[in-house]
Figure 1 (spheres, rainbow, N blue to C red):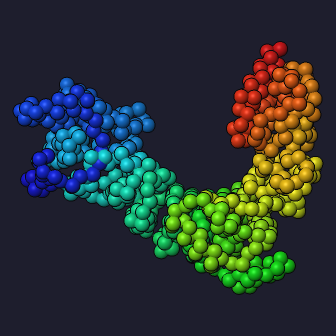
Figure 2 (figure 1 turned 30 degrees about the horizontal axis):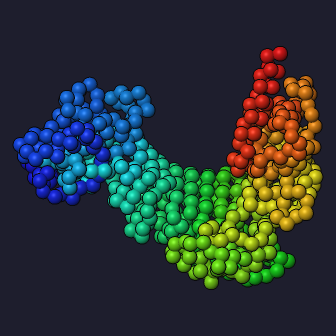
Figure 3 (figure 1 turned 45 degrees about the vertical axis):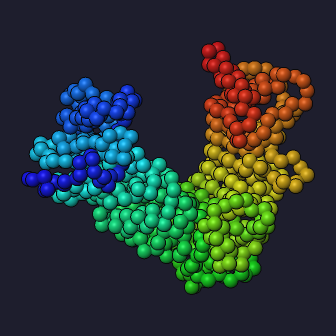
Length: 608
C-alpha cells in the first residue's frame, strides 16, 4: 500500500480542510510558542506532534504515554465510556472521534495549537496492525454521543479516508446500537451518514444550537435513508424548532419502530398521521406538534353546531378507525384540526396511558400585546390563522372534550389520563380568556378503572366540595394532579382548596399515593395536633408525595410556630409522606422546614 492508497493530506504548513476533535495543550507550551527563535519554535512543534504518533494504544491502556503526552490532556480517555469495566472485549460509548483517529497513531499529526493549522491530519501509510486495531475498536462501539465537540479539530475528510482503507465491508460502526445527537451545530449534521448500521436501535436528537434549512434537509435525508440502512431501529426521538418534516420520509418502512417522540415539530398534512398509524410495532407515541404554517386535513370540517358533531365524527366518509391498533401510550399535543384527524384513526384496545393537550389558537391577543418574536414564527402564525377552520373560542374547547369522550369510549382500558391546554403562540402574547373543564367531562374521566389523573391548563367552574365528591367516587385513584390555578381568575370564591380540606382528601382517597393541587395558604383553619400523635391503624393515608400549588404560607397572627402546626397536621393526615414541594418553588424555606419536621415525627414514631 502506498501513501496515495491511504490519503495524502497536506503537511501542517499548508491549509487543508478539517473538521473538529478536541486537543488541549498546556499553557506553558503555548507561552513558549510565542518565542521568536524559529529553531525553538520548531522543537516545540515537534514535541506537540510526536506524542500522538507514539500512542500505541488508542484507548490509553497498558502502553505508557510519553513524557510530553500531557499535550492531549486526556482527551481520548474522556471521550470513552466502557460499561463493562474496560476489558478488551467490552462495548464502548464514545463522545468524540478522537479515539478513532488515534487508532492510526503512526500517521496522525496535529497542527500548532492556536494557529490556523491547529487541526489533525493524516500523513503516511498506516501499519497493518493499526488497521486491525481500528476494526476492533469500531466493532466495540455500542453507543455514540454526537455533539459539536465530537468533531472538534477533526475534518470529515479524515473520517472518509478511514472508510477507504478499512478491511471490513458494511457500516463503519459494526455494532452501533444507540446514536444520540445533543448540543450540536450545523457542521455536526454532516457526520450523520457515518452512523448508518443494521444494528442501530435508537436515534435521538434532543438539542441543537442553531437550526437552518440545510440542517433540516440533512436530518430529513438521514431519516429518509434510515429504514433500509437501520431496519431494526425501535426508538426515534426528535426535538426540532417548529420546522416541518416532509411527508415523504419513509415512515411506513420503520416496521420495527416501537417508540416515537416528536417534539416542537410542525405537521403539514394528515398523511403523516396516517403513515404512523399503520406502523405494526408502534407501542408508544409522543407527539408535541408546533403550530403549522398550513395543515391539509383528511376530511373537510364545516363549522357546525355542537348537536351536529356526532354526525361529523361518525359519518360514513370517515369510516371505522383502523390505525394504532396495538398502541399502549398515546401523548398528543396539537391544534384542534390535527387532534380531530388523529382521534379518527385510533383503534387500540390496549391503551394504558392517554394524554391530550389542546394547542389553542382561538381568540388570539391583539397585535399590540405581541412580544418580539422571530419573523419565521410570526409568519407561520399569520399563515395558519388564514387557513384554520372556523373554530370559535367556545367551540374549540367543547370540540376538544367531544373528541376526548369519543376516544375514551373506544379506549376504555386507559389507566392514566392527562389533559392539557396551552397557548399555541407562546411569546406572541397570552390568551385573554380562561379555559374551563365541564363537570360532566370531569365525571366521565373518573369512571372506570382510572388510577392516575393529571389536568394542566384547564380550570374548574364548580366548587371544591363538588370536586372532592366527584373524585371520591373512584376508589382506584393513586395519583391526582389538579390545576395550580384552580378556579376562574374573576371568581368571587377563594381559588383552590383550603389547607384544612386535606383532611377530607385523606379520608376520601384511601389509595392515593401522590397529590398535586392549588391549596389556599391561609392556615387559620388548620386544627392543632400534638406532635407524633397516634395514627389511625386503618390502611388509609397512603400518600407519599404532596405538591401544594404556589405562593407563600400566610398566617394571621404573630405566632412564629405556624410551620410546626402545619407539619404536625400533615404528619397526622399522611404518616407515610416522603416529600413536600411548592408547585412554583415559592415559599421554599417554609416547606423545607415543614418536610424536615414531618420526617422527624416519622423517625420518633419509628423509634418508639
